[in-house]
Image (cartoon, rainbow, N blue to C red; front, side):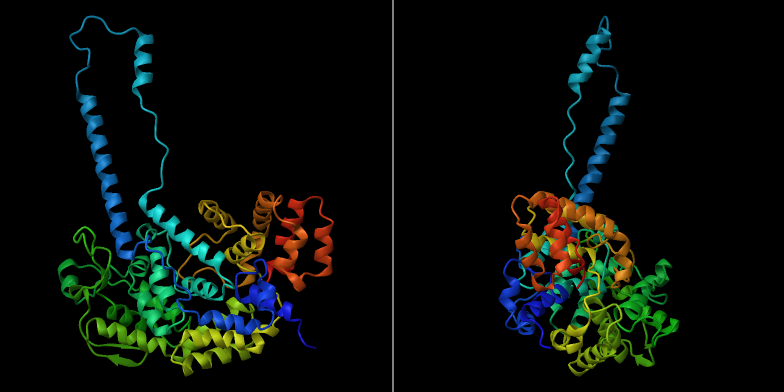
Length: 486
């Protein structure tokens, strides 16, 4: 039996995008697959072109200068306190001291009111980037490319919880992920692993080859974190074709991939640099292939080979299918995506095109629970809210258990529905808050047609119709099984 075109359009928006906005189901009903593919072909798809957002180098320098100024203020305040403590009393040599009441009054008027604390520069940069990201998701017609950005940003995750990364995580996503989201996987991989945010997050910026010049002079050691996560999480997958020896050898290959210290260079501080003095000299063998000494090119060559490895294609295909389609994705879909990855030399636009063209991607039941961030953006789109202040959005994501750019570990947030089941009660709280704010402006029946259209079951429509109030009706819509799942 032929599928209802509006039902297929609604499925496209929920499974591959960020959910419908007013009129979007009808707008793509004639060709939902074509609409998704068309978004891939739009010039500049996935980019955020905001001249007010800083590059990662600019952000690193701004954060460094902020920390230095704050340190200088603390030292100055400490010196003032010490000077005041050691100074003779102001009334020394005068006859008589002020009465106790007078002294209290003087003290009361002398103490200045404390100013309201403002977020420091790293947090300001974090919030500005967060707003740009959420605005892009809310403003997208369908949101397929934005969903791809979110997927790859989670795959190659960094964490704002690691001090210096907070100021960089938004620039990292724009520079390393968005710039290559529809390009070649090898190019994205190279951009990610050489980005200052990743080098800081996984401790490679200070990794020193044991036999390097710096290693002999400083007696500091090799750090294997980045090498291990590249093999285990970013490319080949856990327990595939590599060994611990491969991890160690690869870690030696990428020694010297570091960052220019902002303290030493006011113009280029915080940017990537290859430090020859830290690099382990000599040839290295990684996964059965010998790589001759070649400085930075040695590491780039290893990354290029990892990007083309069949295990990488399989790993990426499985993650994409699981993130977009099903917790246990159809094997035929994974096979199809892996083959396309290999046949096109990791062309991510072609892999994405294959994903939305594959019949298995549309036939899978709508059983997958949306991750919190995806659900929250879908809720905002469904009821027509664009928050002017990003802070409540960030707070909501914290409450929902998927804090922005703060994954619990280098493997990122889970792609499986089971990981998010315990947070359903928090979604109820957020849904009630959203519904309460817009109830006077949004008609629940119209919202059902906007958000779900033909996907809404008769039971869901009846439940919403029987709600005791408009806020309750809207909250029930946002918590409906058809809205929660993709």
